[in-house]
Length: 199
Image (cartoon, rainbow, N blue to C red; front, side, top):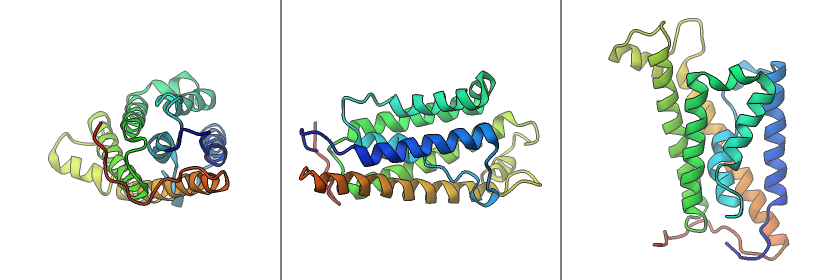
């Protein structure tokens, strides 16, 4: 990416819009059942870190998530086991993305966020299986946690579908916003493909 002033205004607007949405969703119960888990936060943690300057610490976006949750739900909402696992996964995704800044193109970024979404799904559902007393601690129950979930609740596989759709959609928005602004400023765009550089 260019050493000139980076194209950040449009991506920043998207980040702020996502932050406001999460606050009202958690603090005021804005829930659409069909869109449960349709959220941009893994895209922000991974793709957002890719497009922001190296001067922005990789923990900035995960810490923003914690701050929003703290403001919306209080300390109890950010201290339970599943929440800690979620924040840790976002931090790992952001750290990994920070190592790839300037080294991968759009395709690499989208593949990266897909990998992060899958890892997030596996880890968080495993944590749920381990901590929820409604699940037997057997392989069959773990498989249930990964697919159908508990009776009376939407299938957990729907959460994976919604996560992948939202992460890909928001990643595309972030990358398109970055490249649009880069074009307007005549700065370097993120290419569709870029060979991994060795550092």
